[in-house]
Amino acid sequence: MTLTDEQIARLAEHVENAELNKQPITKITDDHPDMDWEDAYAIQYAIRQRKLDRGTKLAGLKMGLTSFAKMKQMGVETPVFGFLTDYGTYADGAEIDTSAFIHPRIEGEVAVMMKTTLKGPDCDITKALTAIDFVMPAVEIIDSRYENFKFDLKSVVADNTSAAGFVTGSNMKKVEDLDLPTLGVVLEKNGEIVELGAGAAVLGHPAASAAMLANMLAARGEEIPAGTFIMTGGITAAVAVEKGDNINMRCQHLGSVSMRFI
Ligand code: 0L1
Ligand code: MG
Image (tube, rainbow, N blue to C red; front, side):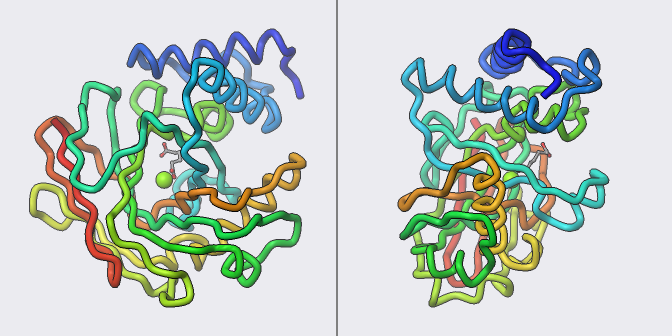
């Protein structure tokens, strides 16, 4: 670590205030160029604790930058993880207040619900599949707190990997009844297809994302508890949304998820 506890606390307040006030900020590595990964996750965890202290409930965990295309685009080889909140949780068909965000984008994903604890290290697809219960289609809303989505990886980890919300579909299936890598998704905005892809875009297999999350948490002495909801990462590229947009994601075997930004 390169930052003091005081600096971590101050940066957590600074980044969280950007979210709460919808006022974008410049990336924090501009002022702290030597910040390391531990500092970045310490800031994210401090933001999480600030929210818990105010009564926010955790809704689950998310993996980000899990698609090879996005990793290449960002010049990184390591996906990142963040947390999901109760106030960012939306049901299928939700009307979502666009003014709750700075510059929202959406990503088509599949989400999983864990049946048993998944504890790393050395988790792999097989172990993850045994621990996953249900799979459901989900759309993530990301909203970087940095101006124009301009950041580097450490800044984005500190900013809870741009997590802002998620919408889940009403259909779910047991994991053993699906072939996750070949699961197709089609993302439509205002009736036009804007993105499409298959589960294999997520580290080759969405269960690999859950396994990687368990391994990353193990390095911190943590595990994925049974009952955890996980957004496994973007199958599609992120699509900008604004007030008035209607979004529909169709997911093979799992029905659709829709929302309207009002
Ligand atoms: O969920 C994601 O893959 C987003 C990770 C953070 C990078 C971004 O804001 O695009
Ligand atoms: Mg995502």
